[in-house]
Image 1 (cartoon, rainbow, N blue to C red):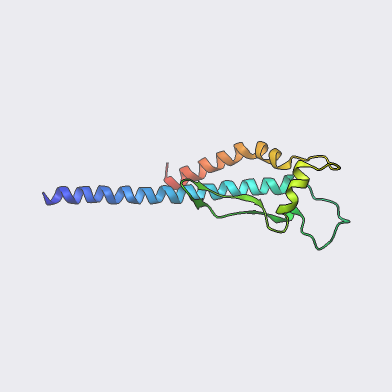
Image 2 (tube, rainbow, N blue to C red):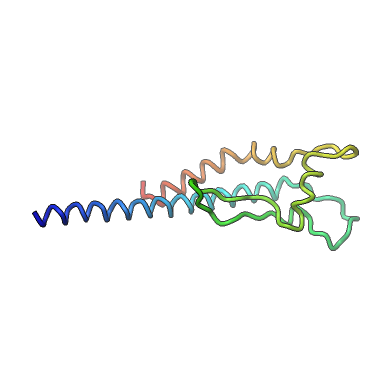
Amino acid sequence: MGREDDGIKDIEKELNKLARKKVRAAKSAVSAGAQIYAAGLEKNTPRGRSDQDPHKTHMRDNVVFSKPKEDGEIYSNVGYGKETASRLHFSNFGTIKQRPQHFVERTVNEYTAAVLQKVQEVYRREMGL
């Protein structure tokens, strides 16, 4: 009778270990995908005119991504820092006098396949599949 309890405890212990490993692998995979997407966003973001205020940070130089977060699902935010995020709308969607450049949408379209492939690769490697 005592051995059956030990067997169930061992199975439960291994399942808990596997669950923690799954979360760790998912966070690692999401982080790798966020790095690729951030690099693509940096590449596709227009530079802007050089005659503007030299103290302003260019959006291209201010692409950031967060650590993986867990809120029902595991995700990471990719975007621009506080200094430049407010200007994103004007460049990406345009104004009355400026044509929209749609570089965020272009980045999503160009890098979705590469990000998914990298996420799968890292997840499989971390899980030992």
